[in-house]
Picture 1 (cartoon, rainbow, N blue to C red):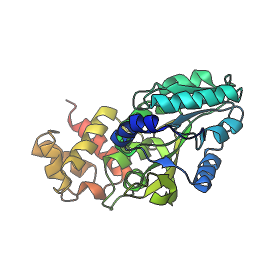
Picture 2: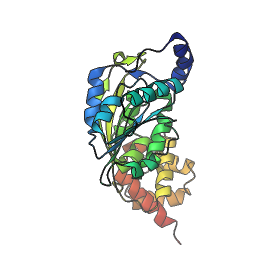
Picture 3: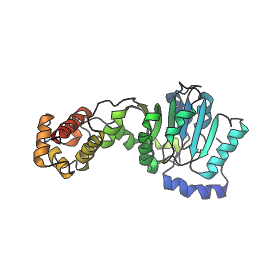
Picture 4: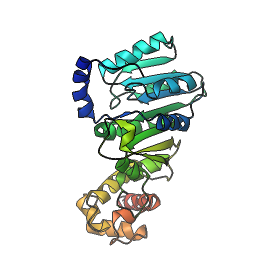
Length: 287
């Protein structure tokens, strides 16, 4: 922690915190378990998203070879940077004024302390920004090894959901295609200041070097999944037709080829079945 904000600082930062849905972690036990789950070593670089008042920062810095902490609030970033200078951590700890929704995570790979080191991401994601941060991390996945993230519980459940449940959807499929995602713990509102109105959850994400299931056409695969869940109350055949993926005849032929009943709904299909359907649709489009 880096000291208390003055009254004027609290007035300046409060609107930004509310706009981003920021709730700062104050439970030392949860913080310690998050750092332990990251498992950083001196060979690794760690990127902390939303450093805030520094609940995780210095413990992460003590374990990692290099730490880049992102903070969007200028006053919080300035205090953390000053603390880093006071600790003589300038060479290993970089407190950046940056927006995690647009940060170039791909550049972290070149900043590892040693060539064999890992690129690790950790953070308590602001609720209102989590969708955009997750999307940015997904784009940069090839440059990342693992991430430990605290999210709104509902978002964490969507990422880890399995077929058949209400939470299962396109987000589940896209992330599980490229990562192993492990739920670690549910965190109550009292662990934060100010307390949020909902529960949070911590997950660990281990990114894969190759997709879990090979697909013949990645853009088509994404279109199939989005169309299927875009009208999830409809049967699969109707949802795909509504998504503009072909004529009824073509879709029926592809579903038969993939051995999938057109009357099923999207949430019942596994990742493997979506990949199989993509291959069948790709085949029916060939002359």
